[in-house]
Amino acid sequence: MEANQNTEQQNMETAAKKPWHRKKWVRGVALLIVAGMIASELMSRLIPSEGVVISDNKQTQELINSDLAEALSHPIELNEAYRKAVYQEKLEQKRRERLLSLGEKAEKQIADGEYKKAVETLDELLGEVTEEEADIWQLKIIRAQLLFSDGQTEQSAEACGEVIDAGEDEGGICSFIRSLIRIAQEDYGGAREDILGALENGYPQEDVCSVHLAYCDYYLEDYESVLSYTASAKEQGISEQYDYTILFLEAMAQLQLARYADSEDSLTKLLKMEEDEGTESDGSLLYYRGVCYLGLEEFEKATEDFEKAQEAGFGDSKDTGTKKTMLLYNMGVAAAGRGNPEEAEKYMQQVVSRGDEKTLAEAAQNLLDMYKAAEEAAKQTER
Image (cartoon, rainbow, N blue to C red):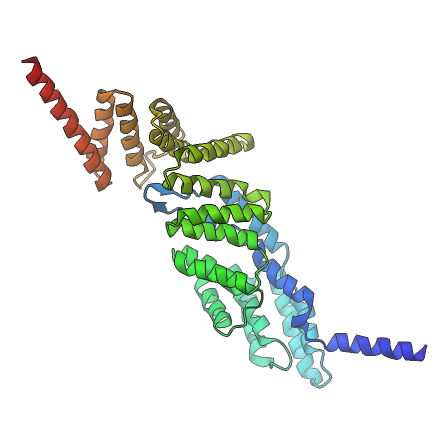
């Protein structure tokens, strides 16, 4: 009986002295702070690429907000971690109390969403704690996460870089965070390398990484790779909340590859999803499907979609880019395809007069010149 009690006591002491950063719950907590918040952050960007734009539609924004709310409902539980870190007999009582106090202070600040203050408290702790007392790199990983949560992206990228360069990015968290920062900076090549580095270091959400890689490869113009990664994400069992995002990426890649029938099918499914969910359309999906119909030479359907896109506000007066010009040009092409030169000329003249898209203006002028030459030739024939 006494022997069993002694053995149990020894086990308890060994568990208590086991480094806190090696415990499973700590690694789990470290992943939780990032996983939800940044699962789809990158899909909120709106950047044109050869006339096709990754949309920042309302449904995508709602997904981001829900991920953020989920992440913030699981604040980093530093208190117990610090308790483990300072549970050493050799520490002086005052020093032990000091480190414990800092841990409790940081925990409360994180729970209250005061990430900036939590970083300051963590910096204070890092300035006092030694490597024998705690895992310095684990604390630095947490610090990088807090900087990211506070919106201090440049500082977070620098903090992540320090961890990555030291070969201490356990779980790939810092690589994944930095990839998102690089995407925001439109450094898609660097972001891609970081995502692959995150996976190499054990980042657990392979499915989410596949979606992010697909996004990066879209802007790196590797459209076949986009389709490969979206297929991988689905095979890996990614959550259905990403169905819209994946289908949208597939539709855009298919359109760039001139697979008009496939892209039209994907866009039709997206429009059905928006209709079923009661999402207000901004006209972009209708516009892109209209482009697909042009490629398929279904000019009546293309015209119908372009008109609906215009009614939904695509390229309206608030648009400061070239969406309006793109829409007018393609409506002119559809009119020409339907054998309506008068309507085609009307749209092409508007494209030329707007002058905000040189390539389209030149193409429109060429078509106008062709019509003019044809009219003159017809008059000569009549004479």
